[in-house]
Image 1 (tube, helix red, strand yellow):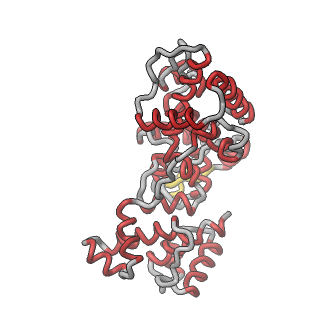
Image 2: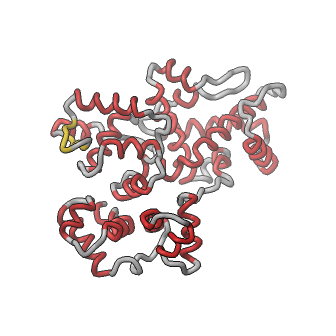
Image 3: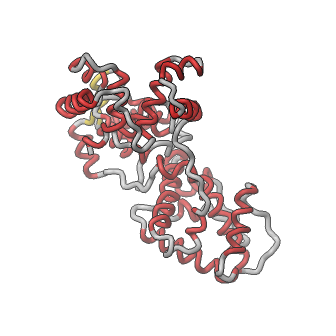
Length: 348
């Protein structure tokens, strides 16, 4: 099972006391700040990015305090924690077995759910030759997607339900540590109204946040299986048709990207856009993280890049201050840029 406590422990292990506990909160919430985006890459935590958007700070603190009470973690600075030996042992025996991949799948997870729930309802009613029912989804784009699928599919409508059922069972049986009821109780079909998320959580006797995590986990599991073998899942693969992969850059950084490609320097872009230089530097770090083959030699000489990576590796740290104290000729921006570009590679 994909437990929140296990995920928090894993994140703390990855951070190794170099970030505050609330960096984990921002990661799970999917905060699109430069620091959070960089942490997701640098500490190899991208799969947990944005997987718990409804998580409140109060709920996060409650979960965190449970780890403290169990003596699985201990303070190593202000709002910074490390795993105790008991915490390390616990994590070894309870490593998160999650399919979640927030960085890759979360932008379109809700759309996949809307498509799946409507598809199940419609095919179920097809099976029983029922034509009078209220669609469970109101999204016009989802309705149009389903109409297109039904028009283009060579599968007879009467057989769709059986094939869809078979593919869902195939996926859910193949999955490890997943409770199919998390998804199945939510589905609407012939003379059967699916439960809400809160009703399902209550029925399964778990809290709403844990239920949300398990729901996202099972959807990401389906997406992963279908994406890896579309020919095996002829009906379920339709859920991923024309899914737009949104640009991972923030709106503001995209504007900077356009100007940078027009030949303007970071200083000129800051003046043109009336932004602080530090904001443009944040954008450049975003490019290093997200744009394949983005060159950073213009901003950091290769010899300095190598020194930064060498110090980071030798000191076993990604903390900017530690690296800067050793290499005073490099600016904080240059260190951030190099770690964004190459930092995660040397740690994996």
